[in-house]
Structures are given as C-alpha cells and as structure tokens.
Amino acid sequence: MDTGTASELVQLLTPEGERVHHPEYDVDLADQDYRDLYRDLLLVRRIDLEATALQRQGELGLWASLLGQEAAQVGSGRAMAADDFAFPTYREHGVAWVRGVDPLDLLAMFRGASNGGWDPHEKNFALYTIVIGNQCLHAVGYAMGVQFDRIRNHAERSPAVIAYFGDGASSQGDVNESFIFAASFDVPVVFFCQNNQWAISEPLEKQSKIPLYRRAAGFGFPGVRVDGNDVLAVLAVTKRFLADVREGAGPRMIEAFTYRMGAHTTSDDPTRYRLASDLEQWRLKDPIERVRSFLWRQQLADQSFFDGVDAEAETLAVRLRDGCRSMPDPDPDRMFDRVYREPHPLVEEERAQFRDYLASFEGSHA
Ligand SMILES: Cc1ncc(C[n+]2csc(CCOP(=O)(O)OP(=O)(O)O)c2C)c(N)n1
Ligand SMILES: [Mg+2]
Image 1: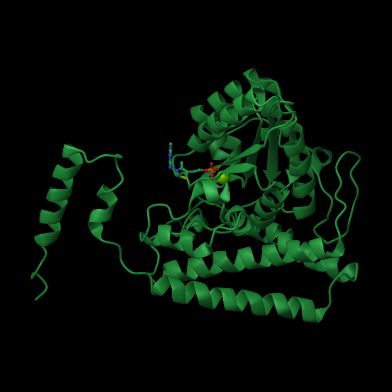
Image 2 (image 1 turned 30 degrees about the vertical axis):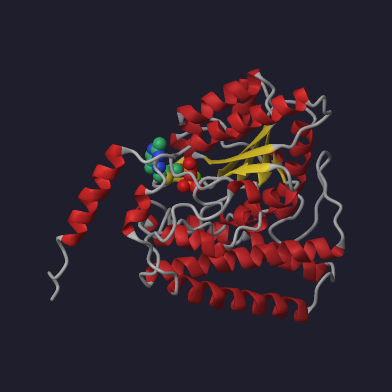
C-alpha cells in the first residue's frame, strides 16, 4: 500500500510546537487568534471527555469521541464564514462548538432526550448523520441550490459548503456519487475527510491502496493532505479551499491525516484490534500540546492565560454535567410527532401500539 510521503503533508506547526513554513499555505494571525484557537481546542477536548464520563455513568446512551481530532475540526470550522454551511457526521463536536451549537444540545441527542437539538439554518450546521457518507449527498444538493442562487442573482461568488466524512466513508457509494456530481457541475463544496485511520475496527489499508486525497484527481478536482493534528495547517488549507469554491472554481478535497485516540464509540473496545504502541506514537503528536508549546515558545501566553482556560473548562464541565442530569425525560410518544408534516394513519396506529406496549409494564414493578 502507498501510504504517502512526508512532503505530501501540509504542516505549519510541528509536534514540538515549532512554526514551520510551507511554500503554498500560510496563516497570518493576530496574537489573540492563536490564543483563541488554543481555547477552542482545550474546551472541545473537555466537552468530549465530560461526555465520555457521562456515558460511563449511565447518563448518555452512547458517545462518539473526537479525542485526537480536535485540530482537524477546530481548524476547519474556524475557516468557515458565517454564511458557509457544514454537513457533519456524528463526530463533529468541535465543528459544532465553533458554529455556536450548545454542547448540551449534542448531549441531549446522545441521551435520547431530543431528536436533533438545534436549528440547522440558525447555525448553518446540519443535523448529525449516522448513515455513513450520506451527508455528502446532502451537502452537494445544498451546494447546487447555493450555486443556482448565485447564477440567478448574477452574484460573483456564493457561500461555500463543507462536507465532513471519514476514511471509511470514502468507500461508500454515496461519497463517490457526490464527488462525481460535484465535479461535473462545479459545485461549491469542500469535501473534508478526517482520516483517523480506522472505520470502527477496519484499518485504512482495507479502504485504499493510495493516500485518500489523491482520489480527488481521479474525479477531476484538486485534493490536498494536511496534518490533521496541526490546527494552523488545517485552518490555512481550508480557508484557501473555501475561498476557491466560493468563487466558482468547483469542488476541492482535503484529507486531514489524524488519529482516533479513543474508541470508535463508547460501545467499542479498540484494544481488540489495534496496538497500544500506535496510540503511544500518536500521543506524541497531540494537537493541543503542540499549540501550547508554540504559545510558550513565542511568548504569546503566560501561566495566568493557561490557568484561565483551565478554569473556564472546569466551569463548562460543571454546566454540562448539571445540565445533562437535569434534562427532563421526553414523552415517549414524541418520536411519532414529526414523521410527516400532517397526521398519518399508519403512524397513529404505530403510536397506539407503542402506548399499549408501554402500558403493559404498568404495575409490573409493584
Ligand atoms: C451506511 C452505513 N453502513 C454502516 C454503518 C455502521 N457504521 C457506523 S460508523 C462506521 C465506520 C465509519 O468509519 P469512518 O467513515 O472512518 O468514520 P469514523 O467513525 O472513523 O469517524 C460504520 C461502518 C452505518 N452507520 N451506515
Ligand atoms: Mg475513520
């Protein structure tokens, strides 16, 4: 298998926190912007750790951890403009954070207390999609609508759309079909693949003989591989590609090369299929540690800054724990409410059956 070379990887910050330069991609941020990125990364990790703990305590049905993928998500999310639109998988908690989705809305969904939780049009962030790869079709459809609006309004540019998907999803028909449509119609979409090297227990080498970003060339649009644990590189590449697609250049693909440091979900046990030594290797490339080292090295932050962000993370964690535990249980009937816009006899029949089923338990615990 061709796993790609180091020179194919866009990197602006080494794992040691050293700022390096790339001939094509760069960021020029104010000091405060660097600190803000660190804050995002740290708070997103805290949300994730807290959610994993809540699941272990029986407060959530399931949680899909993003541990290790914070930079890929914060960097790409922060590259978006307000009117760009993101289509996530089920793991994009970091993108949700930068789009302003309340993490409690994510927890409500994984607790079974809501069927979605946020207004996609208010945040320009679609609902989570569990059907692997399906959101790429949604993204391309939405982006074609955006493109029609641009043509109708004689506008020079349109908003951009970003479609998130995983290395495993790259094998799905939905993803390949969306690539073909996007390429054929020059659709304003960036396909953002988080290659965390696993699709549950299926390793990357069972998905592709070549680095995933090179697939884009076969469909007729540019693709780039970026160090997915380097928030600056992800930000730089995503900003550039979003700008390209807004101007009608056609689709782009980014492969963020990263690693899923946690389990696939809280239902999974990765010790059954991967080596502990791999995880140790990737711990050395931690996306947060390198920004911390960079801020120290460049004297962009002092101890009181880091203490302040830690305190903020603690306050957020308390809000999440309390908010999660005090969510009212939804009426079990509610899942039948929004199947169709109008009442539907079959749905009503199923609702009645379900009510009878629940009633059959009444008194049985007395
Ligand atoms: C169409 C479809 N097939 C199978 C599944 C079961 N499934 C859930 S997650 C997953 C692996 C996805 O891997 P990847 O795309 O790499 O995303 P990651 O979970 O690593 O972020 C599979 C096969 C599903 N949800 N949908
Ligand atoms: Mg994966």
